[in-house]
Amino acid sequence: MRIMDTKFVRGFIKMADDGFQQGWHEANGGNLSYRLTPNEAESIQNRLSDHDPWKPIGTSVPGLAGEYFLVTGSGKYFRNIIVDPEASLCIVEIDDKGENYRVRWGLVEGGRPTSELPAHLMNHEVKKRTTNDQHRVIYHAHTTNIIALTFVLPLEDKIFTRELWESATECPVLFPKGVGVVPWMVPGGRAIAVETSKRMEYHDVVIWAHHGMFCSGSTFDLTFGLMHAVEKSAEILLKVLAVRPDKLQTITVENFRDLAKDFHVTLSEEYLYEK
Image 1: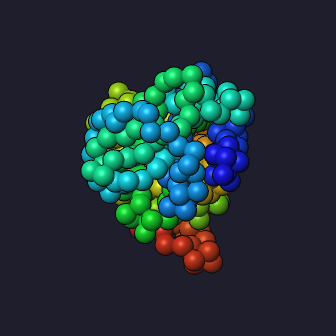
Image 2 (image 1 turned 180 degrees about the vertical axis):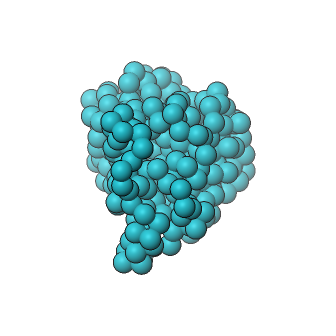
Image 3 (image 1 turned 120 degrees about the vertical axis):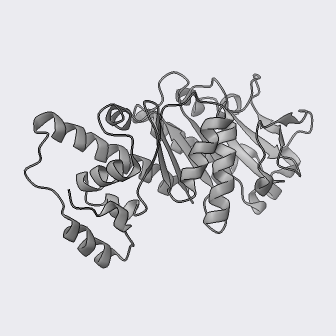
């Protein structure tokens, strides 16, 4: 099968363009990765190249040994993915120790995978383990309203979660485990990857202060929808704070418990504190 004709490549391209249309990917900002299923990897084997040498990942991910990933390229623009995906994307293979990668397809004009590859792979390893192999998508975007909130809210999981839950009724249902928050760190290295993966042990959403957001999910639609919902909730909250910082009314703790019961989700009591 031609790689460009596969369902997972088409879905990847659509999600990347959806994110650009939202305004989340200025210049070369943001990155996206997808862990191929064994059947998907097998279906394209005769289309993959063996010419690229192995290179160090910069971290160790033994839980991903032998896996294949479709990822965005470093310095590539999301706005160009739909125009020229073979120059903007690549498929990488992880070696049998989880310490090196090689490019098997894509980046036809040169380049390398996203500089956030260590963060993506460490988070994929966590989510593969904690979701019983279900999660396959990791998405990082520069979501404007979430970034703005990191300047005005305390950088605490509990506070961010509760404020986002209160701002849109569907949020506790979509991310009942809340959100994790990482204070500002230099992006692209192992240190921020470690801090993000710690929070991904429990959360599907991790916010990077003054930078953006990481989301994990089992499909492109679910992952994009999660990112979109969190960002929209942040937009609502910012508008409320701009008009009246002391809210006249909001969703109450008892309301949250009723919502959880009707929608069959479990909400952590950590976030159901009386304000």
